[in-house]
Length: 235
Image 1: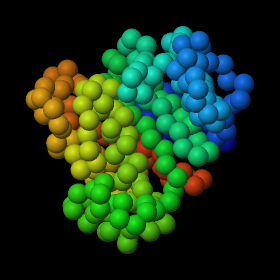
Image 2: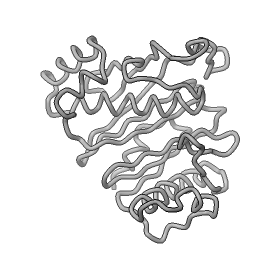
Image 3: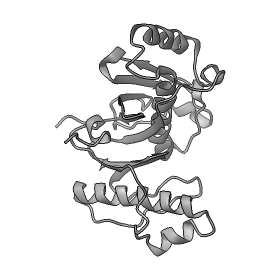
Image 4: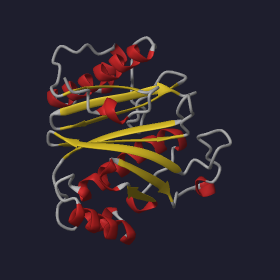
């Protein structure tokens, strides 16, 4: 049996859980039910299922399953001492968690393995990224939809960045460099709007300025999944 897609991408001390189908009987905590009151049934199932993934991951991590209520910006409120991220796209739900002492920031994103619509790549990328994507598409055309993968990797970085900083990023504020077909990437935040422009950020408590992320990705079964993390410690 293959390992879960998301688990292949994580540092050894992070945990992931995933599912390919919504769980109609997934139980929501009262606080969570209130957060999705009035939404469509499909959206409620999606919300519940991905939180079921998150609670399974928390249990494996060694933390009791708890309510995971979104804040006003829609970011899940994780338990103290835990970092995590959730993602969902058609036919896939996943969550990743880790202790904050092991990794300071963690983000996951999943996308359908389909090319971006015409014109979208230019809006979400920088010139040097487009040049690299063209090279990868020519050299490794069957490995991945490289333009969509770039989008996916940046979304994973955003999900790692925002909960820690509460600062918005645009797609061109992050530069992603893929390690060829090696299924890794590096990402750097090159612009951040707001006071301080991110220079005071320190995911690693003295090791770097919080702008650099490591990443891993996988393309399989019609899906692209990317994980970004920063401030990981050696164990």
